[in-house]
Image (cartoon, rainbow, N blue to C red; front, side, top):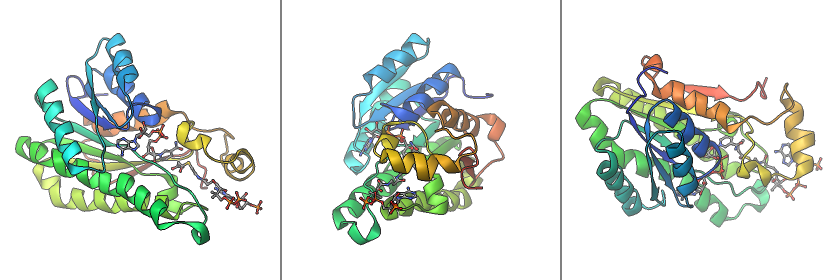
Length: 246
Ligand code: CAA
Ligand code: NAI
């Protein structure tokens, strides 16, 4: 990918799953990575370093503006600049609507939606000052099409698309780009919570390849969208879902 070498990328939720695969892919492209996660990200850092690139782990709770502010300060301390933010931290608290509690609603909104607002707000002053930068956010096939048991999650994953498009309209003139990736069902910890029978009989059956996607297949989309190869792509949603909705 063109233009990722020596860029500095903050990736939230990079201790595991899609975020970790993205950190490793960015490192492979020569980028420096801030592994930002609530959970311990030192294994991701060690793997990035083993690939010959540089990374730091910063513990962050994306729901807390103070914690996010500290994340940005630590990123600047470590690498002196920020070029890319990947808003990837996310959670599920699934229940059919008739059983969904207000707590489950609030928890998912605060990580998946307010967390994206917090992180983007905190990096923006730096991106605007340098008149360049890319903010990418992990949406979902569920944001675009809805899903049983995911009222709260679908609201956030549709919400981040609206935020992304609004930011592109506001700040394309400042040299900034904002895009979403909408993965299908990917083999990470998050998917392990789906009852086995539902996964097999209701979800995988709709994927022509009859398999889960791999985190690396989402990482490749993030690398492309962050790179100069995508410099005219702004306000877009890239579906990477193995045609599960066709
Ligand atoms: N798609 C299609 N049908 C589904 C479904 C789904 N995702 N989830 C549940 N169903 C069906 C069940 O098969 C069941 O059908 P039958 O009545 O025909 O047997 C019916 O809905 C009721 O399901 P349960 O008996 O399991 O009901 P419950 O109240 O005990 O549990 C639930 C409901 C918590 C939603 C549970 O079914 C569940 O966890 N389902 C999976 C939800 C899901 O797909 N989550 C995605 C997580 S991964 C992710 O979110 C990442 C991403 O972006 C893609
Ligand atoms: P994961 O559960 O492996 O990773 C999520 C990471 O987010 C974890 O490391 C977790 O510690 C971190 N996190 C959670 N709350 C946090 C908080 N408050 N502050 C900081 N970090 C926090 O799950 P996965 O699958 O890698 O998910 C990554 C993103 O991809 C999420 O936004 C998810 O919604 C999205 N997604 C996942 C799909 C899948 O099928 N796995 C499909 C579509 C989207």
